[in-house]
Length: 206
Image (cartoon, rainbow, N blue to C red; front, side, top):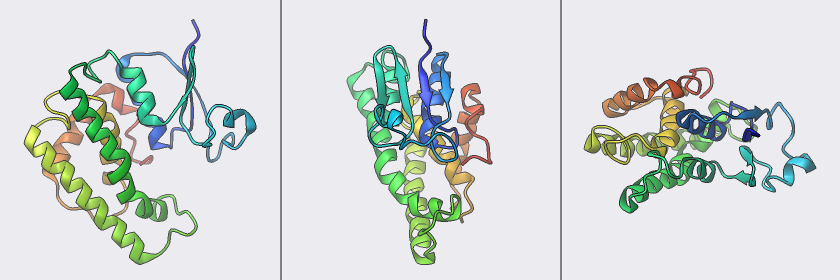
């Protein structure tokens, strides 16, 4: 049996989403380094797999699949991570989509400037604006966790917590001023207790 392959470097938060999902599901896989510092995603061979030239890409018996949240949903279909119940699944989707749009947009400039140190992301005002938006978004998640007392979609750990948990990890380990968020801190502790999260929550890899 051919193992599914994950193409992408582990410094990518989107690659780590997929790897954490696979580990939660107990699925064996092979991984290849692609992206910054490794094999270039502009390579014609890679572009045939993902024309966007982005990681991760999952390759299994059915062919290539890209977009990290779509890959996670595909892998977790039929498992408790992605519930069959229509309402519960919608809640998981809601928080996954929020992470991919509102939350990612909030932290993007500050993280690119302060951690990745990309050229063109060094405007102090824009960094400060991004940090403020990032803290505001995390406050929204904190309020949700106060309501549930457990996880993003309710009482049960789901895919939503994989994508959000890595975002919380990034927030906690980036060099920014953070508001005190007790519910988020407790949530992160619950996630850290999961063995499948251990490899993907190293402080040096936000």
